[in-house]
Image 1 (cartoon, helix red, strand yellow):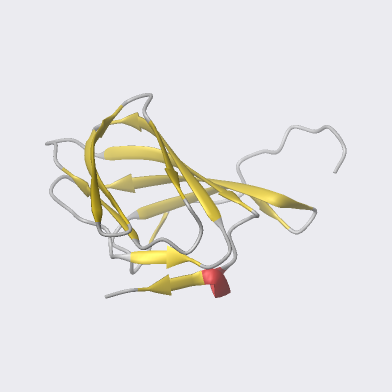
Image 2 (cartoon, helix red, strand yellow):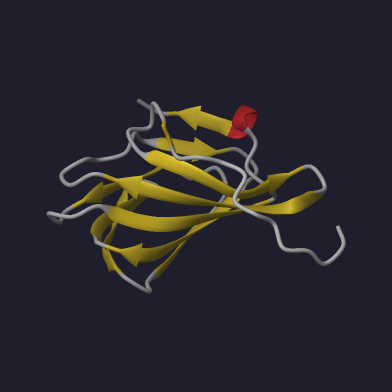
Length: 120
């Protein structure tokens, strides 16, 4: 992939995982990673799920969440916190604030639907 500015190609959509997603970068031309923006409404907990053979990093932009990874409560996350989620680890996040919880989801290699496994 050559150096380039990639305009936002996706509009926000609601997922069965109970959050809103905007794909920022997810292309076969750049297979090493993907970036999406997630938005979770106040009081909502995302569906327990894992990504097969895909590491994930959450970078919290705003709001306050409670993170669970591999059955363990990782703790409260706020703006500028980073959470590493190892591949194949069940995970979910609960919005524990009165405002939307917004974060970036960075997947390596890039997110592919067939690697998503619901655990509920």
